[in-house]
Amino acid sequence: MFPKGVTADAIILRAARPISAFMAVTHIEGAEIFTLDGRRALDVVEEHLNAPLTDTAGHPSRIMTLGLKLGEQWESGTPDDYVNRLIVTADREKGSVTLFEPDFYEGALVQLMQNDPEMMLNIARDRVAAATMRCEGGRQPFLRLYIDCAGRASAMSGALVEEADVVAEALPDDTPFLGFYSGVEIAPLYGRSRPLDWTGVLATYSREG
Image 1 (spheres, helix red, strand yellow):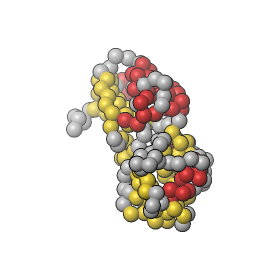
Image 2 (spheres, one colour; image 1 turned 90 degrees about the horizontal axis):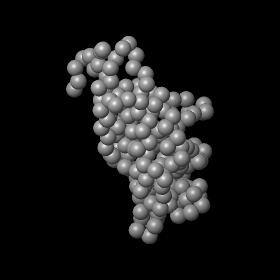
Image 3 (cartoon, one colour; image 1 turned 60 degrees about the vertical axis):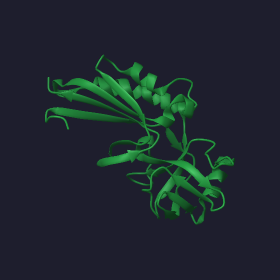
Image 4 (cartoon, one colour; image 1 turned 60 degrees about the horizontal axis):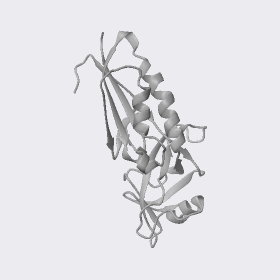
């Protein structure tokens, strides 16, 4: 807990775009989705990929997420309007896919999301400098904290450079900067704090000058 005069301003860095139409979750138990639009979930996902989602051990051959769009469902959106859930494994016999968190529900409309390493780096370059330059009312930043999904590291994402390095280089001043990799990131989105997957959350803490 920080004193009353301390403010935290957070930005969320994303890198996923939809590659499918909306699909209804029609059977889910915890984090395991059995059917989408009444069909085996794994079959639906692999049809969009035109390739197997997992290897023989059940490990995903690529990073894929299911995205739940917040706000107006049918209006055009951006990556900022989605809460994404990483597909961590699949069961070929049951035809199910399992997500990283168990918070999706029957009736939810989701889209298959493709993570884009180039988008990830471009968003980091463009947004970090612009967002951290603003400190309204003469407030003075004293700490920046970056919580970064481990999947965004180059070894996992396939990016040619480390996204965390891009973020650090885009910071506009020498305010102390602390970062670490995580499994789940948490940030305010559409009025409340939410768990997020495959994002970077950069918080700037400032005090009155």
